[in-house]
Length: 209
Image 1 (spheres, rainbow, N blue to C red):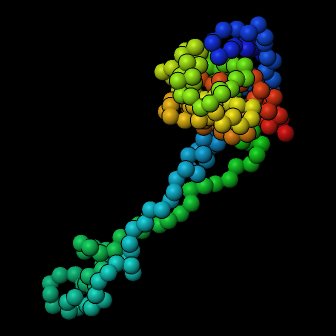
Image 2 (image 1 turned 180 degrees about the vertical axis):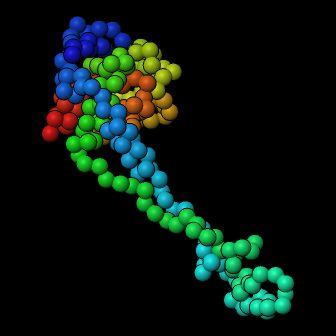
């Protein structure tokens, strides 16, 4: 599929870029997308939750009352889970929520995400640009020219560009990554995907291995 290349003023440059149908034109695999997004979100969890169990609660181990003759149930410790201040039964323990997915499935998920954006016409190809110094106002002007000022956007660079990255860092709705840092979650979480011209080749190369 061919897409027109725009400049930072939002106008057509007269050039077109050919996007590989193997990456941007496949039938999306929803289950692969689901698994990859699930893995990404699971990896963000710290898993540091912890509740004290019976053996970890501070308290005396003395038998609090005699075994028989009280008319109530037996009780051997103030740390009994049935008592206020006692231990927690089967409480949460520190754990890792991460799980593995094979590379082919993750590639399929990213291809599916790109294809979804292409079908929704939420994909823009922008000519490579740079700022002389980090300047948030300049980046906002680019967003305004592309009609993305009030939308979530993901800019994909071919190579690391410190000035562009720093210019966007204060904007919550915009995110700037390189083609090697892309994730399925990041692609789908953005309303619009902006590919810099120099990133297209890297994306296709990464997903065609």
